[in-house]
Length: 233
Length: 233
Image 1 (cartoon, one colour):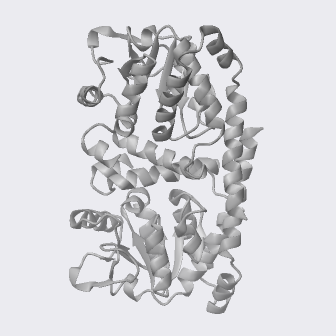
Image 2 (image 1 turned 120 degrees about the vertical axis):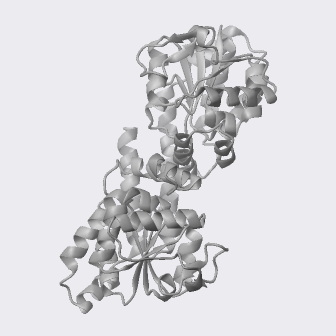
Image 3 (image 1 turned 135 degrees about the vertical axis):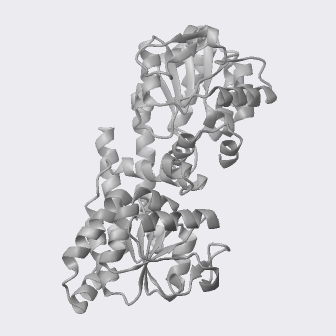
């Protein structure tokens, strides 16, 4: 992360956000909680069943899993769009170029012409690419803030979040929340995508309907509480 | 914190560490847990009963509570020593100058001549001022790492930590751990110091002997677990 910061990929606030994630990861004993497996399957079912799936990329995501996130986009296939909380054209370009060095054909989010606005998000974060998130039915937002997650939901999109805090607004407002460290979650998404690709649309949509995000977040909370109770003894 | 970083007070790793603290603070509902009141009294009893109390200052502490930490040092009175995890002479000087602008008479830790080493800590963090931490019987280490906390204990010093993670090695190895956000903990330390100053040495030492840090950390864990259980419902 510090390297990502020094090379202008990660924002200062991204370092603080990363620390918040580290603390929650610690509370899961730095392992993938069981609850996240169900969420990963539901997320893959959403992505594979989507008309226009988009993966939204910020600085931390690009710094932590540049190769795996590109592989995931290719295997779905889904569109990659750079979308920053703390916008800067230079940083957007560096992130896009990092993704391309890792095998991405196309990266949206950089063309001023293509920008449109989503309602309910304070500027400049409301700006999205009309051909990317603007046109998406399913959006994967790794490490996103609550305002944006809620606005995407209000705009009628199905939202998949990767967030280590099961109590966050992002986690609570997403359709599917994977409570796990992104460095474990994205490789797992990739593995499950390759395995679930042969499934029919109706099978995928049954997996999505059977998934209850609120209940699953409750399980993630239980995992954290158990870890802490183990410590106490 | 971002301002502190931009002005060269806070290290990049300090931003990540701050994020970790934010996450734990969130798990206490961003309020001072009850358990920290007992710890604060025990900490003040240690400081007021000490022969040579020293407050160790790093970048995050200087950025977050520059004025209150100087007031605390004056009221005990205790010596201030700049002691960085990620050392740089320029940053040490900026921190010392920030403390002086906030009323500190003397700030140790900058003179190369006065340096000595404590055992059991990887270089360069083992370097301390012979007239400061080197000579201290009680050291307050806000926001310190586990290696240093353990080494100070091994060197025979009584250690007071301020750490929002009750499971950290720092928290576990200190004699007294205040599990609270430093921006609330230091003003509270100052308030209790002014109130406890009239107490006799024997009264202070009784408060210290009656304090059980392990038990108190268990209470802090309970506070976090209760907060999370409340969320789940």
